[in-house]
Length: 259
Ligand SMILES: Nc1ncnc2c1ncn2[C@@H]1O[C@H](COP(=O)(O)OP(=O)(O)OP(=O)(O)O)[C@@H](O)[C@H]1O
Image 1 (cartoon, helix red, strand yellow):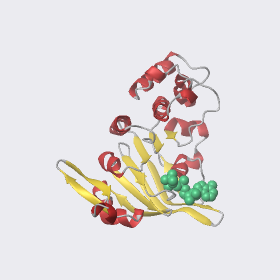
Image 2 (spheres, protein in one colour; image 1 turned 60 degrees about the horizontal axis):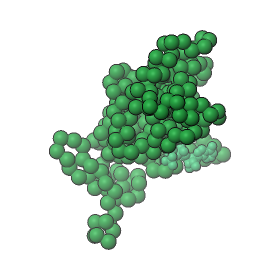
Image 3 (cartoon, rainbow, N blue to C red; image 1 turned 45 degrees about the horizontal axis):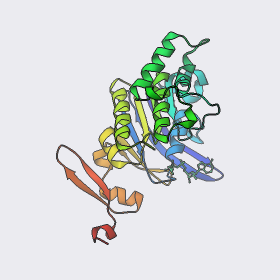
Image 4 (cartoon, rainbow, N blue to C red; image 1 turned 90 degrees about the vertical axis):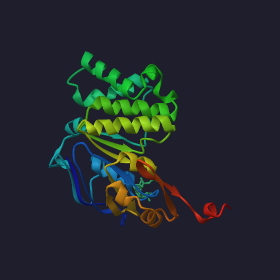
């Protein structure tokens, strides 16, 4: 469904991202991990078509992104970005309803309202629907934004740190929801900082460092303490858990020695 070949993006003589290959099938969840500034958001912006690659190509449903007009692209992929500024004082409901825009041929109809309502229910944001969006807490706003994405009914979800601002329960619920959407046949690419959530939810993990891919594959292979130490420059420990992936913890010497 989604394919990137030898993807690179350069600004002012510096490669923010270089040499990234990936492919995502329907039903898959890909987590993109890496330290701050390693190029994760840049990758997501290239995959969404917001940025044009300096090198390489992104293909969605076997067509280059550049071949889609913006409306057609918006029906296929939805983006949860880190920039959540809304220019107008919309209510939460109106923000979620914006997800229907790519499907409208005039004004919205009963079907659009039904889908918006259902999306707000699925992200547990329905009780917030009449609140002015700018008055919502970070976590509440995230759930409303997630409802906007669901209302858009895309094939591909591109999520930049979707669990930012969410407490453990809502973080789990949101990832479970996108995992379920993947099982329903959509594709999900999520930038995550939480290695353990990535290990729990992702089929594959792409690990970036300084704009270059370091590893790409199933979490059990990629998320080893050795590789994580190389990428994040801090020691890690994997604590075995019966019936699940090991728990990965940064484990600097000071902690190990009880300092
Ligand atoms: N338009 C730009 N011009 C110059 N440098 C940029 C531009 N956009 C991003 N960068 C730089 O590119 C690098 C990668 O940025 P990016 O936002 O992709 O990283 P990230 O992995 O998402 O980081 P974080 O985890 O902190 O969100 C950073 O050093 C950033 O400062």
